[in-house]
Length: 406
Length: 176
Image 1 (cartoon, rainbow over the protein chains, first blue to last red):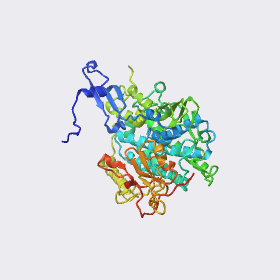
Image 2 (image 1 turned 135 degrees about the vertical axis):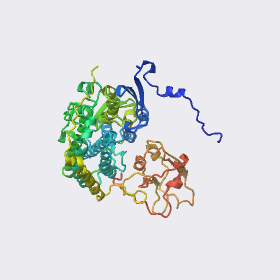
Image 3 (image 1 turned 180 degrees about the vertical axis):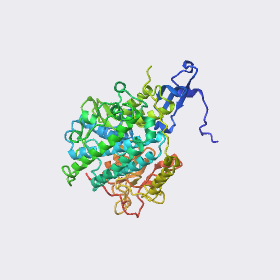
Image 4 (image 1 turned 90 degrees about the vertical axis):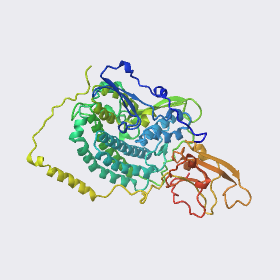
């Protein structure tokens, strides 16, 4: 062994220092037991570690340990100009990067006061790609959830359909998942020629597939037995914990920031907000949450169709159209605190900016991540559930660890 | 404490009919679906042999372009390094000597140009920032390697080889 090689020295006391258990062994009753789930566990959707106190098969307490995927986004953003943060915004919620970009770009545009000057074609393209990505994110969520509770086929089928969306977005932006497509004041490229027709073709392809998904997953008896009446989240608890997105809507509140805030061109588009109705069990159970996601896929398809209709008629492609024409030469917002929020597939994604210099670098860029708030409620809704249901509840939250830890 | 989850459920064990007991129609029905999928169009490709088509704007490995006469376009202005969010690009500028006009297009050139591919996030901002059309992100994928030091790409790996035509990726819809 060479002199400079690093030798691994085993220090058992460091394990307790790094991420200690929050429950004391001395506090446990005689029949209780601590089970450590994760961070390397396939059904925790990344690197989430759960400290589960169980009483036989029943769960007494669940404590999530986070931070295994911490990449210092907020600190990093304090050292970068606004336009260079966008590639890192992609990496927050890597399953729905377009939505994050859209909300981030919207926030900076409002700070600069140029959001009214953005041409409608650009806004329609943004909404189109964001809704495509919302579909992709829900496919990943539903497919991975079905796989968590034992069905392998839906995962592969969802991946197959998701591949079409990835290819479409690659055609537009040049990358499959981390797009860097929506820029402050514009877009990287215009839509490629023929995209609208291909996208419409995809919508027609997808509709029978969604019916298939409905039959394969949502009406499957095994799936219903695993998810109905499990992990019921009452509406008051959801509001108290700041839960947003499909999880809140599954608990019965018709709350969608696309309607509430009516940002971008969403007020011009006709779509509904599906909510959980407790068809298979109680309102707000795991089945409702998945059902809301599947219903949202239908609504996203409606939005996409309307966007394409507008993009081929009123705001059709012209030679003079330049998606980068509106890019601000210098990004110098006023000194202010600003919070901008929008509806990402997981819920309310917000960016808080504090700008107090004359440079184009934010003094603070805080992310209000929907996954983090949604995840925080699991310690409540898993109480009294069975150990096997913990995985079902965890999957129905549909979180992305990249956004939880940032 | 009142439990939020109610798992108690009435289990119904319905008597199966004779046809259901045989299981043959169900097995046959399931087999039909399997056979039907055998003749569908396959969604996967055999990767190393077959390669899929990339989008025209795909952002893969970088290339430093030469012009039609084989001279390097890069003038080491440093705009790509400034615009890089991951701080992956470093360069050393040098002045063109007499007799090197066939090598470098302008009076200044990059004597040393390095991209740390482990830092690079393939966002394409360097390509956007370049005023001389020198750096492009090509459709080539980044190969893997066993050694971290091999990921620091110098001019030997980045500059377009002499004699090759301009890279197929010349699609840049909007020139400023």
